[in-house]
Image (cartoon, rainbow, N blue to C red; front, top):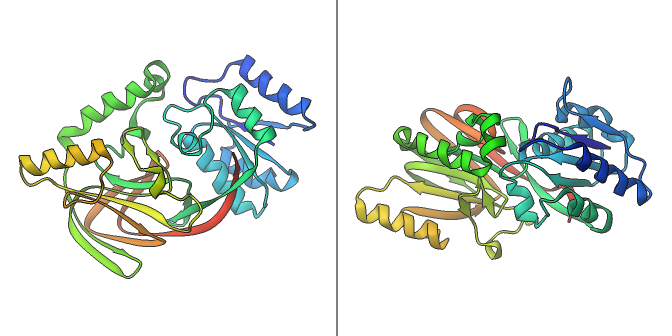
Length: 288
């Protein structure tokens, strides 16, 4: 089953679709193509995935997130092949998948499934990140037309526009029996080494299948020295200071004093005062 989002990234060409289907068919697969339209990718996977033994997703991070959610809700246990055509492609970067459709389909044909942890958030699923605070709305608020014409630069420009609106949130963070409180301008629960292209985690500290999330918390800098320290740590991936912390946990709860907007896999995650996030260990398999 091939689920394709023709509007992802800069759009798909007929040549790319033809190459993908041709290669799959040449290697013994009988391909049924579903384009997202009247039914979203999640609905397509939920309705039809049980009829197939391989599910290929053609789209960006958001499309894959919907496909994973639909597959899990369907109860079908089949591997996912991912052909990334989005703007950020954080998941593909983490998994080392090619951004070339012709190369990505070769991985699906000749690769092997890797079991991945999936997040549970507010009754739904996420594949690689749930976050609040600075720049988190950029992914879903940036117009699709801008993403197509400017690519990753569209995210950067939207991020600059959001700077004046950044504010700290008084937060209680409870994780695996521990508690942290503080004024945070950014918080993320991730299972990825790349977050929106601007935050990179050391691959040696990230295991996608260990049942644990990486939790990144950024405090509001209180003076220029603290701000400089924060920038230095972001640049050097040193996330173990007073202004930025990297934690590991299988379950985390955030409590705020006000409604806080979240983004989940680059899309609107709703507004919440209390959020609990759990790790679903090795819930899906993606071919790498």
